[in-house]
Image (cartoon, rainbow, N blue to C red; front, side, top):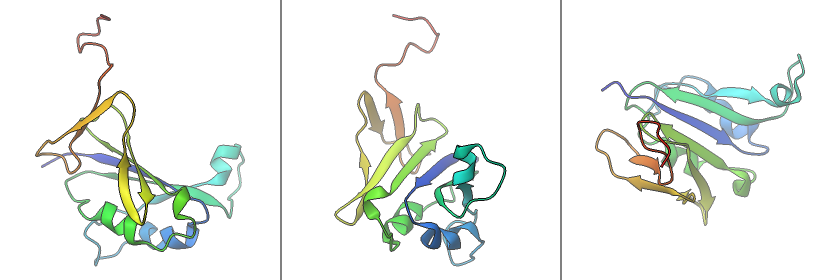
Amino acid sequence: MSRYAEVIVLARGAEEVMEPLTRPDENREWHQCFTRVDDWVFAGLNRPSEECYTWVIQFIRHNWRGLLKHLESLNWPNPHSVQVLVRDEDDDCFGLWMIYDGTLAEVPLPRTKREPFAASLTGILSRTDRYPVSGERG
């Protein structure tokens, strides 16, 4: 099945924890690698930075099973700073997961609802306040 999903991980002081996920590993359930978005990108500088708190990845297929559980299991230096944003191709917006009591859990976003959808690992996240598909405002 040719679906895509985008995942963004935000975490402070997690360079060491996330570094192995930026390299291929045949033992993982997924095979793509995260890409660092170094601090210098946000500062608008043209030189690398030691600090990184953002990693991105796009999955082309249904091959990211186990990712959220894997992220949950990592030894985060500051688990309260961890935010995982996930957007399946049919989602209206990114969903937000955060670590609560050692568990990565989805945070309910105002004016959204998540419904099961067999072709999606997370279901479909819809905005409840969006305009009709035709583009007409009601």
